[in-house]
Amino acid sequence: MVGSQIREIREAMGLRISDLAELVGVSRPYLSRVERGSRNATPGLVQKIDAVAAEHGIHSTLSETIGIEDETVRQINRFLLDPKVSEAKKAAIRRMVHVLIRME
Image (cartoon, rainbow, N blue to C red):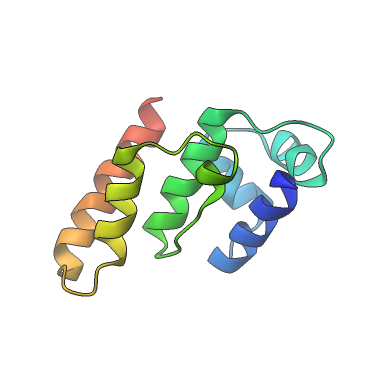
């Protein structure tokens, strides 16, 4: 179930498996196995995918689905999806999230 949700999110972002794998710091074969359900997604991977989805303007509830979303992730998602927040501020948050994903 989680694997198919990851695939749907990836496709909604218009990314190939290799693109998303690079963005979240895993190998393409690993991500492919997760999408097919032959490997389990780690909580860290799920949180990274949610963050990348938010960077692409897509609200993902994947973390909520497996029960790991915390208040920080919810706040970032609300901020990025808020039409009142300027695109410059959203871009700054996206850059920070991207740096944090790379550091983990």
